Length: 531
Image (cartoon, rainbow, N blue to C red; front, top):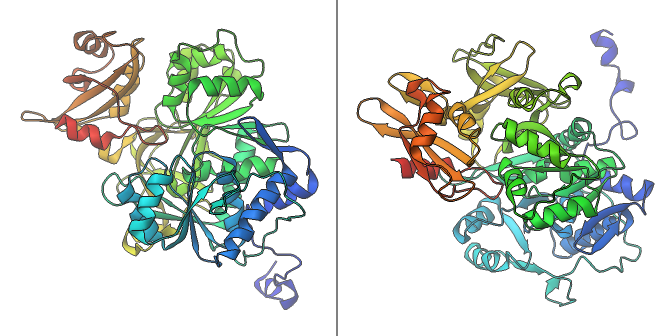
C-alpha cells in the first residue's frame, strides 16, 4: 500500500476503531463476562469478580470525593491485601497515577517519595500506618488508614455490601499517559521515580499471560510484593486471564505451604531466597503437591539441588529477567520438553540462562563497548540493552538520567551477559559487580553459583574487596543452612576444585545476608563491610 493510500482521510483512526490501551479495562471485562467467578481470596474471605469490581469502583469514587483528578499521584503503602489490588484498577481508571510504596522503607525515604512524586494523598494498611503517618506529616500529605471496622476516619473497601457500584474506565484518554510511578531501591543515592504508561502495562500484562500460561483456571498466589514493579504487572495479568488472586500479606513459609494446598495454586512468583525458605523450613510437607505449580523467579541462577527439591515438591521453575524500568519481566527461560526428564544438573545448566524475550518485549540485545552486538558464542561479554513498548517513559523529574539510560536508542541495563548459539542470553554480572583482580575480570555470579552447589550453603553473595597487590579480590558472604555447618577452609577447598585460583574468594564471612523487601541481596552494604 503506497503512502498516498495510507494518507486517505477515511483511513484515519476514529473512536469506533481506536481506544487507548489500559490494563484497567481487564477488570471491566471480567466483571461483565464472568461476574460470579472467584477473583480474590484473602485469609478466610473471598470476592467474586463482580464484588472485586465493586471494590475498585468504591475506591475510585472515594478518590473523586477527595478531588483526585487525572494526572494526580495517589500513594499506597500496603502489603498484598485486596485493597492494594483494587488500587491498581481504581487509580488508573480515573486517570490518576498510582504510586505503590515499599512497605519496608524508612520514614525519611517515604517522605522523599511522597514529595518527589507530588502525591495528593497516602493510603496505608495498619501494619504500615505508623511509618506512613510520620512520613506524610513530614511531606505535608494527608494519610488515611485502611480498615474494615466501619470507622468514619478510615477507608473501608472490604464490606460485602457493594450495591450497584459499577466499575468503569473514564480517565484514560491517551495510552501514553502515566499509569504509575515506581521508585527504585536507591542503593547509590535517592531513589528514582520510574514512570510507566498504560500502553506498556497493558502489553506487559498480556505478555505475562502468554509467557506463564495463565488462564481461567489459574490460581495465583501473591508472594511477590505488589509494590514491586506492580507485582511484575501480574496485578493486571491474572485478571486479564480470569484467574484467582490469592493475597498473602506476609512471607511466611508455613502460610505459603498451606495456601499452595488449600487453594490449589497453579502459579506464584518470588525471589530465590523465598524458595530456599520454603525448602529449608522445618515444617515443610513431606508429600508433593497434588497439583503441579509453576514458579517464576529472577536473580541467582537455580542450582541442581534447588531444582531437585522443587521437583520433588511438585514445583516447576521459570527463570525470568527484568528491571523496574522494564515493567518487570523482559525475558524468560522455560525448560524445553526435551529436558523434562533430564538430570537436575542438566536442567540447572539450562535454567541458569535468562533466555529470550517474552512475546511483548520487542528487542533484546547484548552489545559491546562500541554498540555492536556480540557474537552468539556463549563467551563474548557485553551489556544487555532493551528497546520496545514495555519500557518506562522515563525517570520522573530527571531528564539527564533518562537521556543517559536511553543513549543511542537503547535502554542500557548495566547487566553483563553472553549470548548462546540458540540466541538465549545468560547474565554474568552487573557492571558494578565485576571484580577486577590483577587485570582479570572475575564474575561474582560465577563464584556464587559454585558456592550455592555446596550442600551447607543457603545463600552466597560475592563482592570486591580491596587488596594491595591485586587491586581487588573476591570476598564471599555466606548464609549457612545451620550455624557452624561449614567453615572457611572447607569452602575455599570446594572453590579451588571448581574455579581458577584467582577466582577463589580470599575471605569468607559467615552472617545473615541483608535483603531488600523483594528478597534481593543488598550488595552495596556487603561492599561496605568488605572494605
